[in-house]
Length: 422
View 1: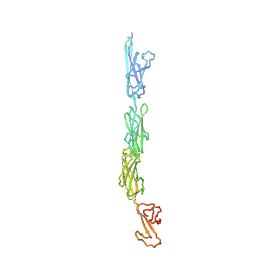
View 2: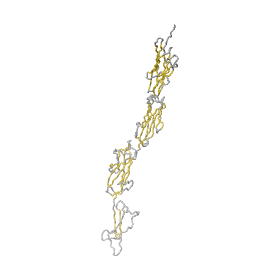
View 3: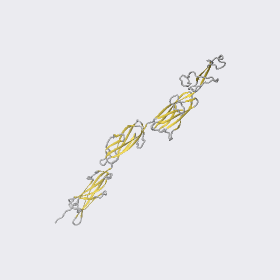
View 4: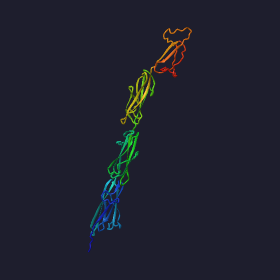
């Protein structure tokens, strides 16, 4: 008489994307990529197994693929059955367990169960990188950014951070204007940051450049990021144009004004730079009181780039050559003071004329004058002198007795004017 001692045994070997990842981390798989789990089932006992079922604790449903060579749904001793399940990689460390069960059927209809399980892992890769660029310490993502005097130094800082969950290699920074930027390292661990720097000199006007960074994870494509930064290169200057009674009299003599007549000085102040100026003051070296008239079109108290402000002062003409200097003062956005000046002139006219008449050479202002025989010739001489401080024109001499008076001499420069010294 005989019997067969049954040993029921089964084995499962689970792999993830072809890797037998019993321990973490397992293969690295970019998040969103497909994952395939394979379950290889073997009969390790001494009798065929029926009712073989494979399950997974992550809820995926393994399906039979191959191995039942005779198609009898019995896991024979010489067979290896393969099951598969699929999914999509999620971020971070993942682990799931495949389990298998089956039974040996005894002669009396009883069942001897067998089971096994196997753990498998993968790491869901989320690669990420961030760059934050600043100009002279200001995170100037939008214009205008910090104001910097033209010619002053500029320092750009690029703070690069690994925002993913895997190490990045080949990390490099490029600036859209400056080109390659020097960095202290080219590998960044998860969460690690580094600061790269570049320097330059401020140029006039609005400036923008963009910092871009690229890094490579162990799996998946490169990751990148970019950030803009701005500054405004300040080139400040101011101009003043001074006029006297409407005449831009930079050089003497300027307009002729009668002594005692009113004089109006006009000072036109213009921003000839590229940034607003504040604290605008106009003074005159002769102490006349200068007052603002117009020009601040938007009422902001700033002499903007597209504005000219008008100031005025008034006085009364004094005798002779006069000169006064207008000075404009202003302060730019950096607190630096600027000034300009302009000279203007006028001539204060005091006009007068003198005539000295003589008869036969005698200055006979009172009677009787010289005695002249009747019928003898009489010569009247008229000496005309400019006793004022400005030339006289249209000189005419007449005599109340109707005698014809003719010019003889005196116009030494031939200009037709009775000059002060003639």
